[in-house]
Structures are given as structure tokens and as C-alpha cells.
Length: 298
Image (cartoon, rainbow, N blue to C red; front, side, top):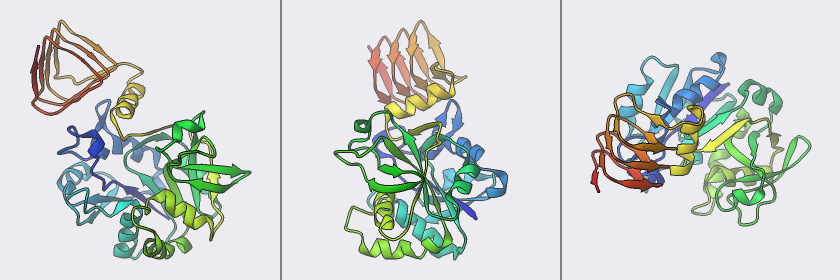
């Protein structure tokens, strides 16, 4: 079996802090998100293939040094060119010629589960790890959801308007090797704009049984400011994360993240993300992303 981490996106919803850094390398309490994902993976499931785009390849190359990973590059430079998750997985399968089972993880998800138990639970069948949101409407228009009977998925919806359950897909999958040839067939048949993993699961469900795994203890899809903040707060015991070289004087910092060296004087920040090189003076800011080297004075 091989492990694949999909990390080829461009994270437009997190601009400006992802203009020049890939989302999977965003720090969570000072440590890249991908480091947390690697820590989840049993040592005998490594090395992992990490699918990245050409634009951010240098950043991933620097991060990967000394780690049990192999980078696989898709030749894209922008959101408009990207292959999408299923396309990136197919590209990797074609490029590598792999004929083994695959454990597939998204590189931008904060999650906690026992991956060995997940693979064992699949028993050689396609499988998806699901997280209970508590309320089905929390998935509306945002996440793929599954209806489950016993051990198996009975229906799957991709970002539905009327979710059939609160069990959200965590973008953690097990695909046995006999499923890999179906990736190309799916991509040929999928309507434009419907080639996300959730649509693949819908399509695959008509051809294979899919196992549901629901023992996911924590999960966040790091797709926007709120989820990025939530991950940092969880990793930091509920407290704001402030970079060791940030200078904070006469200020209040609530539920916020200071990503790098910056200066905050006589300011109030609530639920903000502040990038490196920023200078804030005499301001009150709430629920904003502040890009590198911005200077805001009140």
C-alpha cells in the first residue's frame, strides 16, 4: 500500500496569506499543517507521495528535506489550470505506474483518527472517513455527506442543499488497487465542474460497495479564516498563537494568530490572522486577514 497526500490547490479563499505560500504549509501553532498529517501516518505506511503544483514546488521542496515523502509535481501555475483532486490523483497514478492500494489524504485538513484502524476496517474495499457534524445543515453547500447503514455508505451527496445526514467526508479515503483504473473512466464521464472527490464517490457507489468509517475524533477543513483560526486555537490549547518574534505592546489579542515577526501597538485584535512584516498601530480589527508587510494606523 502507498500513501498519497493531495496538496496541489491554490487556496484563494485564504488570500492574502496564501498568495505566496501553499495552504498545506500554513503554520498551525507554529508548525506546518502537513507536519501534523505526517504524524498521523504509521511509519510502515511511509514514505508518502505528496502531489503538489509547479508554482509552489520550491516551498514544498524546502519543507520535504529530510522527511519521509516524495514530491509528485503537476505542471500547473494557477487555479484555472489545476487538475482538481481526482485529476491530480489520476496524474500521480499514471506517472508512477502504481499498482497498489492507496491511502489518500487531503493536505489541507486538520484531523485526528487512527489510520491503521481505518485501513483495516476497509477490508480491501473502497472506504471514506466521516466526521459527525452534529447538525446536517452545517454541511449545506460546504461538505460532502454520506448516509450510512451498518458498515456501508448507502448514499453520498457532494455539498448538498438538503443534506441527508450530518456525516461529513474528511477527504480521507482508501482505494484498493482495482479502483485505480476507474479514475480515468470517471474523469471522461464526469460533467464539467463535477470532478471533485465527492462526485467520484457518488459515481463509484453505483459500481462498488463503499465502507464508512466514523471514528474520526477531530476534523476541520482548512478553507477559510474561521477554520484556520479554529485549528490554531485547538493546537494551542484555546489560546491565541503569537509568533515568538512578534512585538506586542499595550494591545489585546483575542482568538487570533500572528504568523510571523510583526509589530502590534495599542491595538485590539479579535479573530484576526496577521502575516509577517505587518505593523498595526492604534486600531481595532475584527475578523480580518492581513497580508504581508501591511501597515495600518488608526
